[in-house]
Length: 131
Image (cartoon, rainbow, N blue to C red; front, top):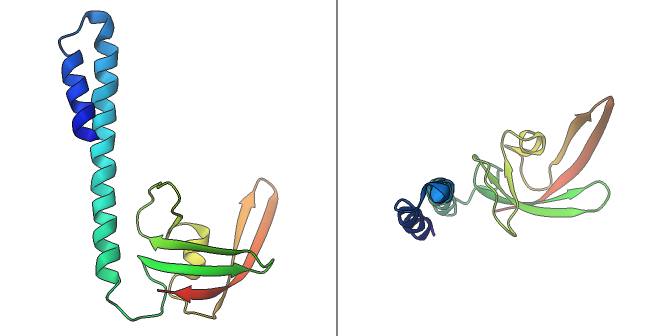
């Protein structure tokens, strides 16, 4: 995708002055795509390396299932870098939930709070599964 976007940017490099904005757009899109690919490759390496471990403690690159006190269950990858992927939920160690669960094991309970304006909401739950 990055290569195709870069090719399109090169086509616009020979374009008229009014189309130079399009060239800049495609160059920027190609750069962002390459950066995202680099992050994805790094994340893949982290997950692959961690899948060999038999530890049940939550650490970066674990697959985790949790259950909130209200009964809602959520599954996600616990990662070091924030990145957005369609249909895959990633939680970073810097997030409130990430800080609350890092180092915990299956069946352990956790809690964290989020302040929004003058309101503080506290979340409670339990670790269901760690892979």
